[in-house]
Length: 67
Image (tube, rainbow, N blue to C red):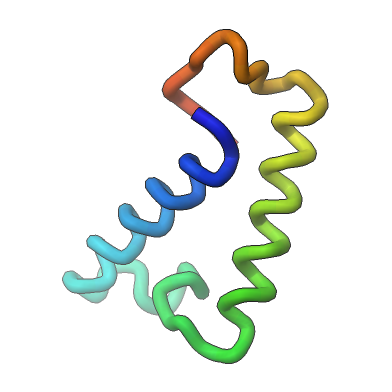
């Protein structure tokens, strides 16, 4: 799993909770407002850095990220 796949799963999860209003004020990714793309780019940059440092080696085909 790469950092983009991780983000997609993460975003799907928090959006599924938004229907229940559980995390609506906690995660800013639920509301796709003016800063959504900035926040997404920032988080993807952080995840890419983690992966680039071999903390999550791609060749091991790990399916779990605990970030």
